[in-house]
Image (cartoon, rainbow, N blue to C red):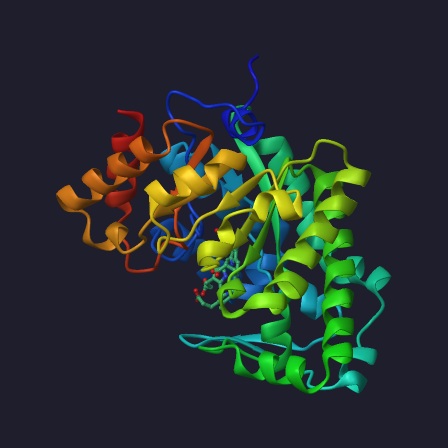
Length: 342
Ligand code: CP3
């Protein structure tokens, strides 16, 4: 049996047809997801019930035959495992207890304690490793430390990550201690996912774009570099995808600086620019505008083909620039895949 397409692309192989998956492919745009979520009761129960989390992970694979499945979980489970209170307000998003100073960082649980909370996630990975079709790659993930910290400090999503910036600027040593604790927790969390059967891991740094200059180096590049080095030392050859969303020009050189095998591009980046500046260092993933999954039509097909063409000269995994939204039309996903695979 030949190697899985996603793994080949991550090793730097240019494929005639790029493999494809979508961020948030298991999600509210799918009626079968909404049914399973209703069965679970709430979002966190869905994350922590392995049979149901595995079921929603498999739903988009059955419906569309994507080349990869992404573990169904959330980046905020790690802060919860480190001792933060976490809940989701329907229609609004996550809420957490806040950490705003050195004492709050010191009160977190030791990293070794995380597995107690996260054990059901590892069980989901084990189920998926058994049940996925043999050609489908299983991707595990975690939030990158900066993005996770923005939620732990503010206690919720914020438009400009103001509270995390304020903490960082008021007490850089204490904020760095928080980043270090999340970094160490992320290494243990992703290692356990790999041991349970994840074949690739992805680091989501959704708010990397709000870090500038030395802050970007210290809080986006350095933690990713540390996590990737530790994972590769423990699990030689494990491929890592990094997603420093809205990094703009800082996408250039990010794979080299962190040791990532691929960088995921958001849709604010021009595909032609990224083909020249980012893909020269290895595999890229992306970067269709998720709004086209709502609007569809000829523009969806044309944009999909344009992105495939722009990245045809090197290793590429087709994806959206960010997660598919709940108002997307499931038929548009089929149209996108048809435009890629022909
Ligand atoms: O991509 C996947 O399908 C895998 C599962 C996954 C989820 N969240 C499920 C989810 C992944 C990889 C994430 C990552 C995540 N979670 C990020 C980073 C990526 C990004 O989107 O920028 C962030 C910032 C979070 C935190 C989070 N989780 C927020 C802000 C929200 C609320 C916003 C929203 O979309 O509702 C969530 C909830 C969430 N995580 C949902 C899903 C499917 C929707 C929950 C529901 O079913 O009600």
